[in-house]
Length: 236
Image (cartoon, rainbow, N blue to C red; front, side, top):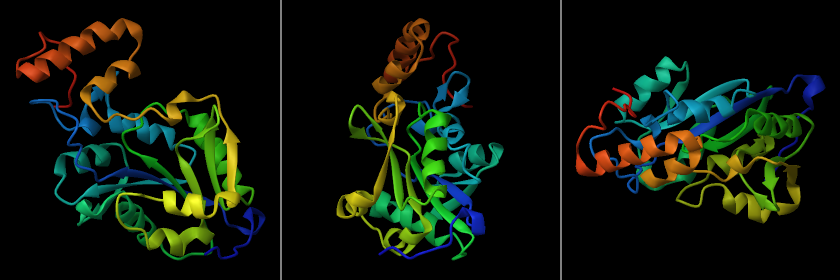
């Protein structure tokens, strides 16, 4: 599975951050509001927060559905290139494969740092430590908080063939389990490595306490199909 590449001192240093954003978000029922990745948190769409977490990477791409024009437009504003997934129903594994296969097979490429796009609370410092581990020679690296593995997960260029062949909804877990002894554990105090947004109610735990009443109003208005009394929570 793992191919050998030269270390960073020989030029292998570009890490690509990958936002996995081709899901359908069917559990996120926001009424007339946009999909969850465009839902506004603290004045920015959710996906902008997730993208910020990948700032330590040398470049960032997002895997999106080919028909998701609104998300592609938002990513263009953020300066993020899109990789189109023409078959999103094949699952997150196929999205990973799309991202990897879009990267030229270049020996100067150091690997990929994968983050589901619905995880807006990952700290930049957490990603930096994962990237540092890859650049130090780790085959794979992931943050561990309270003994549990979280995101983002880094894969070296030597994992290319395994990642490029992924399919289905299990993502890269099969690789991480099969080669668990090759995963470098990055100790982390970042609870954001687990914090994803599946449902509208999940947003409440992501906001500061003084915003939670406004969040609850927005959630109620979304469910009722009415406006939130001037409390704008969406990207227009």
